[in-house]
Length: 597
Image (cartoon, rainbow, N blue to C red; front, side):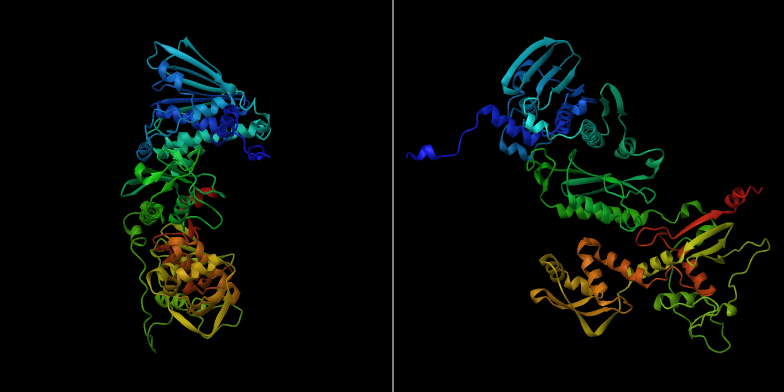
């Protein structure tokens, strides 16, 4: 039998091949939205309007006031790879436009009826109509102001198999809306309108900053007041980061965005940089909101690796990641999180400067009793636990007795303390401190945790060798690679390890105050593989959390006051996990609450 008759390979007819290839670019109405708006922005539009009907399946249209097209360009624009953006492969290295491959209009014409109305000057206008199976094209003269209307009608009407897998109309409309928002976030100097089934749903007038557009498009009420704009950069790239402060957080990452040269992209590394840079601002289980806007020399990035240009390959993404992380860390350090800008004069002095841990004096008979706040705080730092139990229980030998306590700060004639005064405790967790007509409610665990964290970050972690090493086996090659790669860095954190052959490891030494069991210790160490550049901070947060006083631990008055004073002097009034250390009420607020005037 002839060999050729056995072949199962066939050449697809051109019209079928076009429909299949179009699926890489247009797989739902939101794809049309993205591609049509890209063309409108490339045309220099200052106003872009999106109109959809039936979730975008019945109609998806983008109207702009850009440069428009002449008749000769209109005749060619719907052909595959017809483009005005590049002339050769080398031009990909310098392409600065959103679109450049000439696939969008060709893909739309393969799966829907495509109509384009366009004019370059507002005097002469032309209309193109073309559809699947090369129906058309028809070009007629019409009237229109400068700009273009690009509409796709009856998406997938000729491809029922693909249409069957679209989502419900409302879901497709929401995806179109999100694609619209993505473009609006990237181009804050352009006005955007979104019309769904004849109703204006969104109007975003042009603004002067990314921060304003972010608040305008995504936030409600006064949330935009808590947005910040931070800049960073490096060789061949610059970055603008829009990030919410600790007042703004979400339980998921849906309001985190990454843009590269105006395109929204999926890049886990840069999203991770946003989280790492703001680590310590947000409580566990919550996430910041924000956008990372990267402007990069096109020669340092490849935008041609994804049909919809949703992924980018950077020459060195690590440098960009580091620039973002460092800029956010520097900003969080500069930002006065204790609210000290509200204070001035004498009041401000307590908040300024870092708390200096003093060496405990050598008290002898006849010297001051052990009521020194410096000694109390020293005991908290050097011996985080155990702590003195509440009155009525047996006390340890080193416990400071409340009966021996003498308030170190006097009161002025008006009865208001010139220095912080311990006013009490509530719920076995909060310390009440009165100072200068204000009541501070301090979380003793969060405060002590932050003090320990700052100390661990400033000093070398003291370690102790284990009499019996802790053996364990890794569960994956990824864990082995992490431990091998970071062994020296882990040793600087007080974690000394040996072994590694066939996934068998031994923990030889740990920080001197480490108290967790073997299994928990291994678990905490392996968690560090996701910490990236923040390994030291993550480990210091773990040490401080386990070493700090807990909910229900009793502090006598001296230790409690020492802890409160140190908390009020912290440069950042949040624990390493992002929880506020204290809240406050003024005398006026309390009087107002009980209607006392």
